[in-house]
Length: 166
Image (tube, rainbow, N blue to C red; front, side):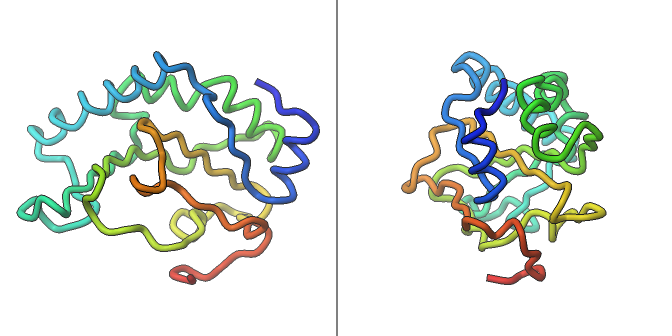
């Protein structure tokens, strides 16, 4: 996939770009199934970490994060190598692309606490956050306000905020 000059201008100026239906429905379903297949496998191996609480005693606090998801399932490994994603990233930062962090996050509706405003790079900094860092978010369910969708602060990409800044 390629971006139009207007999309690239918007991305560079505003710091984000929404691409609706970038993946076909069957691709999203394939990712969703891979994710749901990975959860019980990691749980039975004792390596599924709850990102919201120390344990799973509170149903409300069950939020599971698959760190380095591309190492946990072949579907996720193929996902990070999607030529469409790589083309878009290359337009923004050039061809020397390094994967810093790939996570799958399972947060059922009305469970777990909200995640406060933050810049991803404060959690996994690159060498030059303002020049060469791109985050891609791909929801596997409909992202609505009621479910707790992603929000962006326009033009916040050109200034690094200290961790925990709101």
